[in-house]
Image (spheres, rainbow, N blue to C red):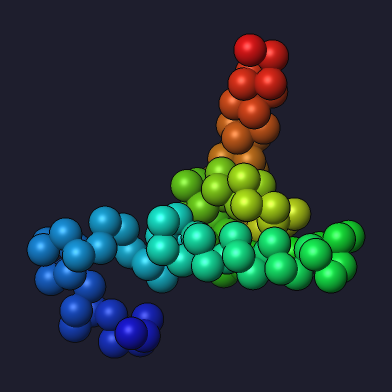
Amino acid sequence: MSRDDSRSFLPTSAESEIVKKNPFASIDQTGVGQLMQIAITKDRSKRPNIKLGICGEHGGDPDSVKFCPKIGLTYVSCSPYRVPVARLAATQAAVADAISAKR
């Protein structure tokens, strides 16, 4: 599967509900997200202070941005035009975590 040829299969896959969102723009949290969690856990067991993050389209997707701190990523990077959306999503995630911590 490649982003370059996704126009040939992505609309059909979405219509058939094989994928819920564009996998090239939003992290599949139950599939790829779990693999990321495993990699992060293993990496931190060797280097606890390593900075890990994502970049690209995923770094500007609100759902992906909110997911990143839950699995231990320390930063996201995205194109300049997506920065406001990413910052808002990160703020919303931080506020939600703070509210949950007070309960």
